[in-house]
Length: 470
Image (cartoon, rainbow, N blue to C red; front, side):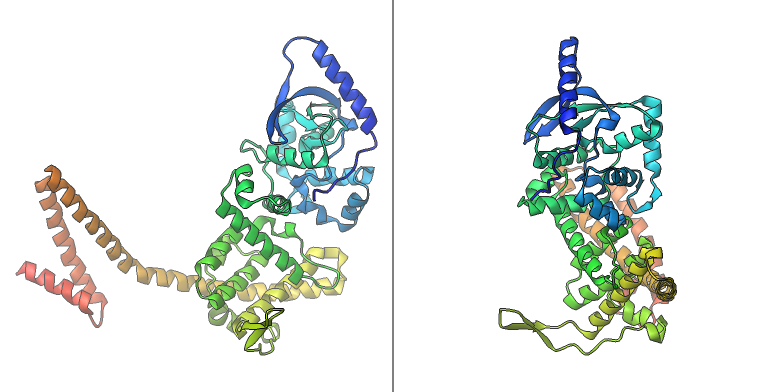
């Protein structure tokens, strides 16, 4: 069900102003400005008028700041209780001006919008209901308000517009590819979740969101993991919030690909837990990539202080599935330990995010412990990175030989095609083979120097080169 917020206190006055200004616009003659929107599945051109800025209300259900509302739980509850109060509207205004990843900081893009409006005025109209609720243009209204402007150009939706219409129209406009200020990733995920809750299929949502079904499957997986992480982060009265993962988009994308490409279930779980821990600690994407299924056992455990190593109890060999009278193998001790460490990090971060809402001693202790874990991770990832680069170097020569084999296989096909059409440049082909002969000679020499006990492949290469030279 789509949440409904009722009507604002100035609804009757706004309806009267809207009707008067629509009438004036129609009677003025000339070409009247319109705005094209999608309304109930069909394109609709709505009339555009000027409205007094202070008569309009921010949309409490806007998807643009859905996740950021949790920045101040007390104000969020007040917003749910009375969306149209001055306090609630001021809170919405504040969130529209701040960074999606950290609402304690002002968003430079909002200041860029103000500068654009100063230089070029309002290029595109907003959109309202006849009650004065901004369906589109909430951020522009906030910018115009800070500039001291008194009016805003807006299109007007039909009088029958309902809250489900408001949500649908807002999404259709915000998901256009030409939007100057895109939704934050977490708010995109929440919009997808809302559409799924309405019973829509992923293919239908993908079409409206201008994306693909596999991309939405990834988004659904990521949101499910984030919801679980928030539940695992609960530490007394504190917990993490979805917006705390706003800057982790690309890392979460890579996590999804890595976890789903690992076929071994236990290895996949180990990889997921270790990378989630690093993401929670806000390590860079390039560092997180070095974390594999064996990261904790090979690199991290030996660097964690003893008092920070997870204390896990032996897991049962099998776990019963409620209601099915069946059992499945339980996760191994490695997975349990990795999960316990991730839980510890999440709980520590929940205290850190709470800031001055937590007791001073509790905050100091959480920060100290989290820093110790970060240092262990940092050192472990340094060695994991060295190991990764070493393995890459070891594999470089074999990979290049395999690539050359693929090129030669393609060469065979090209020769067959050229023979059929009589298009082979025989002299150029012969020159290329002589160059290959010289390269193969050098390759045989270096291969002999680099292998202590030559295998069948190196032995064949050396024999072939020797035979040609004789």
